[in-house]
Structures are given as structure tokens and as C-alpha cells.
Amino acid sequence: MDTSTSTRTNITHTPTIRFFRSRRLLGGIGSLALIGLGAAHTITNAGGFVADPDASWPLFLVFGVGVSLVLWVIAVIAWRFSRRGVGRVMRVIVAVVGALLCLMAVNVLRVHPEIVLSPAGPGLWSLIGGPALLAAALLPVRTR
Image 1: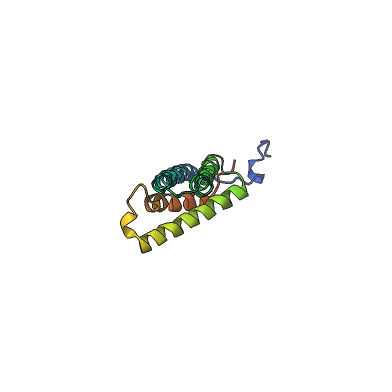
Image 2 (image 1 turned 120 degrees about the vertical axis):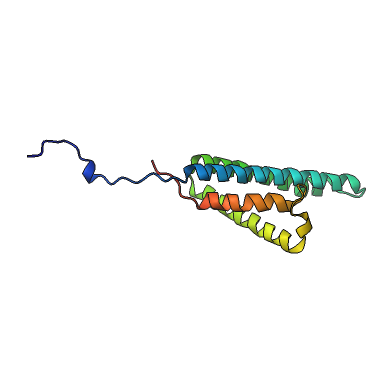
């Protein structure tokens, strides 16, 4: 006669997934690459704005600073997703941005391969951030 009160055999346990730290690391690298891309974008466009005497303030604010702000907001989303791993919408945003950065890296390598290693250009940031964000979005989320 079995007098044990353990019911562990009836409960199915999900094994913990070992990719949790990898997702955190890749999401952090991807978000730092987005911050660098936004800073390079702002600095490059500010230099062009100062050099052009006929430059328009609204165009600079929308396409120079506005795009950088969007990149920084997406960097915060990627950072939060890599730390918490919740939210299907956040996962989709990170995956789409990672795929777009990979496409931008391929395009830079195809059209202007000389600027790939330039920190002022989009090549280096896209080459690092794209695969990192895409992998962070595709790695499984640890269940508790």
C-alpha cells in the first residue's frame, strides 16, 4: 500500500529553456546597435543641415531627428522585450525591425561596401543589430 502524498507524477513539467540569457544578451546588443544607428543618423543629418544654406527646419526635424527618435523608441522596446520576454506585439516589432536591419545591411553591402565599417554609416549598426534582434525575437521565452 502506497501512503505517499506526492502528486508530482500527475503534473506535467515544462523544462526550463537555456536560451534565456542568450535572448537577453542578443536583445541588449540589438538595442545598443539601434541607439548607435539613431545617434549616427542624427549626427550625419545635423552635419548636412548645417552645411546646406537652404536647409529646412521642418524637414530636418521630421527626417533627421524624428527618425532617430523612432529608432530610440524601438531600442527601448527591444530592451524591455529582451529582459521580460512578454508580449506578442513586442516580439513581432523586434522581429520586423531585425529583418529590416538585415535587409539594410545586405543593401549596404551590395551598393556601398566601403561604408560597412564606418561608424557614421548604417552598415556597421545594421550588420550587428539586425541578426541580434532577429535572433532575440526568434529564441523561445522561458516559462515559469
